[in-house]
Length: 168
Image 1 (cartoon, rainbow, N blue to C red):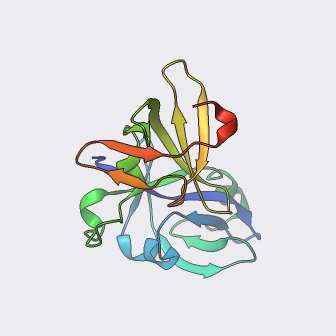
Image 2 (cartoon, rainbow, N blue to C red):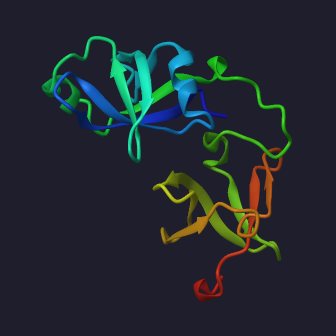
């Protein structure tokens, strides 16, 4: 299990007063405000989301100490993390943090190993799970019940149904 969980990514500057576009990875986007100081990937900077409001296809955030467009631009594409212990416990059996999936072995319904989960992405149309084979070939699948019918965190594996064209 991961010590820190990536919960948001800062996008481009929004306006001239230091606001930024923000892409929360939380089920409730407004939750990022309640987690307290967030950390950058390298752990050298804390970021506090003071205010969050919906934008056209993103969220707009005001961050403590970021008051100019230039300061906001310097944060473009910065990922934000929170220590796992600050996140609420998961109570549903089929619910988990995406970070828990990274590193799991991906197998077909017949048990053939496809590779390892290397990332979970969301480009705006739903979650995509990335599986990398031992040869380094990536496979991207929609993270749906049809494509990923079983996630077994205890066994450290997921069962996937790859599309027929993959040959897997």
